[in-house]
Image 1 (tube, rainbow, N blue to C red):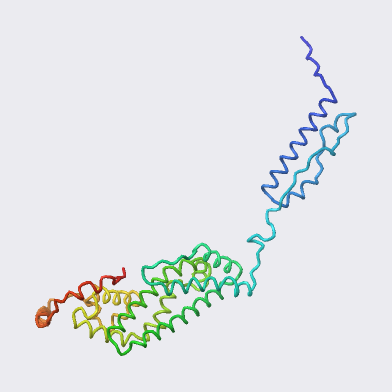
Image 2: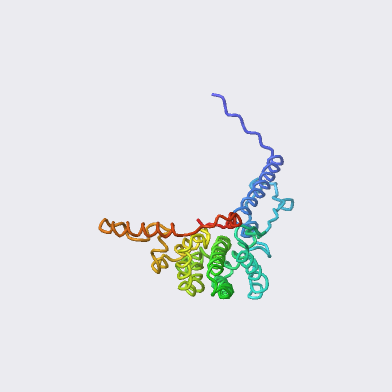
Length: 317
């Protein structure tokens, strides 16, 4: 039987190869730890690793030529994680920016456009919430909208003795506020999710609508319903789109308003009155004849000057 061949061994060449392999392994290990653990890799770099070359006599291990990897900390000063937000920062920088955007939305005309950076405003809200300013931000928002509603009440009081201007002003202001909510609520969405819904167990949009009902609608609802009932007896005294907009928005804000005058609301909204009862068919027929006689007795103007007056009226879905 042939004897196995004796493996050739060169101590100098083998030591150099293993030393080079050790350098590569340490560099790869450093890059892996840097990606996974960040700064904590500095604790592992100093650990000594037995050199394969030391197992061979006459070959000394030399670490002086090994290139140690450089590590950059993952969290640097000035990053969002390290940022602090003081009360002065909130009062001087963040809240003024948000308040300005809110004022633009509250005073914009229906259908108009204003250049607001929703990304920048959302970022302001995000930072305030992350730095424990949620409660103050929520209270400042409610207080600011309450001040705006005092202004709305003053505008309505200017027309208390004038039926048509009063109704048209109320319709415009209500529609303007509800349109503003479609921009305000998205800006404060992060606060809504992590403070209003999570802690207060409610919804920001619902709370802002209730605030409008409490501060504006409830103050004027009695006078408003009375005026609406009066002008509804005169065809086209108020444009049909305006009347429909007022009734729909009132019902959307609070269905209880329809109980103040169900007959009035039933002209513009379905299912306000109870279902038809066959026992009252004679009464229904009499009501229909009364309406027909009233319409026949009305004198309509055929003047072309008012033909397109209400073309720009906006109806609310």
